[in-house]
Image (cartoon, rainbow, N blue to C red; front, side, top):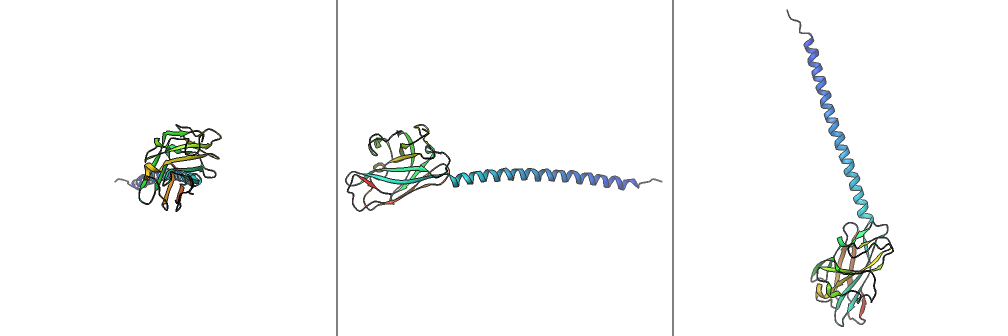
Length: 207
């Protein structure tokens, strides 16, 4: 006669060990998932804070009138309060005159560290095309805005020069112009104005 009373105990032990192994594996997966979610949440939070707290704003826009049309636009730009550094080489301008829409990127062919010869005479706007804009530095305390790396931060003020002739064949009177300055991250700067019914002075304040 055989005694198989211990067989039940061995089977229960095997099941118990298997349950411990499965529980360990599940716990490991849960911990890894929680760590991954935590890292993703932190990263998302940092990106959200950066996008909300950073950005550029347009202080005003001036135009140069050749007698019948505006041939150049000067857009004064600074960072928003508490913003991180903004690299203008990664910033583009989206602009429309209701009939044509253009997208402009910065070109190193049109840069000046000062406004030495007036707003519309310091840079040679003929170096600009319908896809590029230039930069003039008005105020840059820490010298962060250079030709190769035009970075602006707190208290910096720069002018973005646009050749309106190349972009829109000039801007006539009573024309709605809208657009935005879009940095790599953060809040966009808004451009929105309607040209006056008649051009009197060579320099026209538009926004």
